[in-house]
Length: 178
Image (tube, rainbow, N blue to C red; front, side, top):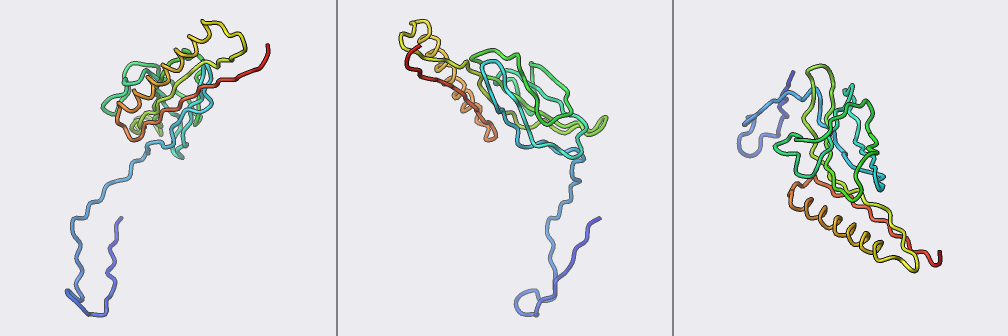
């Protein structure tokens, strides 16, 4: 149902008493809206919690996680698909020093599924503890992790998607003594 109301004017100026409506378009609102607020939080060396704003009409959510660049033309490619009824999910079997892309869509009813949300990209990196007398291997591991973070940032920028987010976590503790 749509209703137009004409507001009276004082009659001054052009077109007094007339009403002009130009190029009106009415689109039906989607019955199952796309989710918003998709993000990776609480990343660790092998896990990440992915969360999003819940949708009132959603009965379940379909999640996809894959490698960056696998999401193309508004749909995920190869990767892992998961169904959940929560607005967050823990991925706890991720590879250390790896970049991931994730997307989600609500399932409101059988045959009524929203479009995929724009993907979020995040990076999982091991926590590295530096101590006095560190070994050369540990320094190389640290430098490899930093190089992987830079690579993830480049992939995020290369995607040229405004809605991309690259969540990077690098935890380095310096401890004096052993």
